[in-house]
Length: 185
Image (cartoon, rainbow, N blue to C red; front, side, top):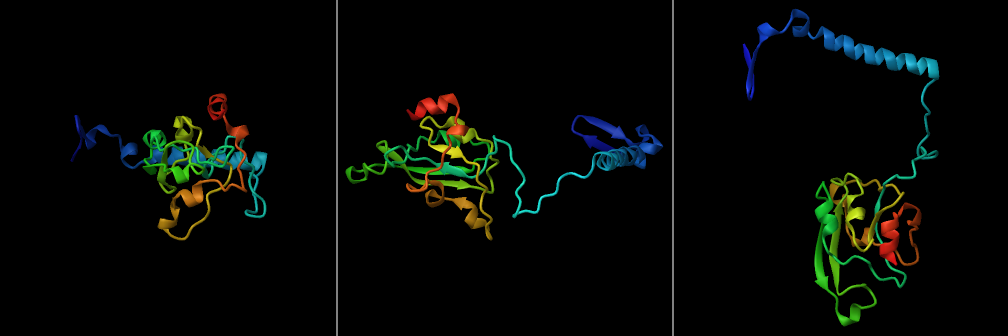
């Protein structure tokens, strides 16, 4: 019997008997398991946390739920340039741009704004490329966990979940790079 792999042909006759019965692979896997078992016995079991009462400590660079920031006057920073959507490797961000009217001047910073801004949290890989690409420092990944939902449609976050509330501002100064801090000014 011959197995083909695009450019080369391999026959079963080239495999040794032990390779045919997968013994080397089995012993290698058992060796890894044994190594972890010995390490657990010698060093003790890893820490167990009673979640949600006790949460596992996270690093400072933890990337959690997204937030669309507002400026000091409470206006949305996002100008719907689309750079975050282009930079997203998972293609999780979609937006629709609109022109600001005179009555909406107090709501949006620029003449163009995102009338629809959605992130599919099931597709998002929390890489942070969106916040790196944003020239207006409008989107950030916070240290908050994404909420547990019961259906797939609930994981598409719109502006209602993403834009920070005026009376509940989220401090992201510790997470900002120097470039982002200068862009805000």
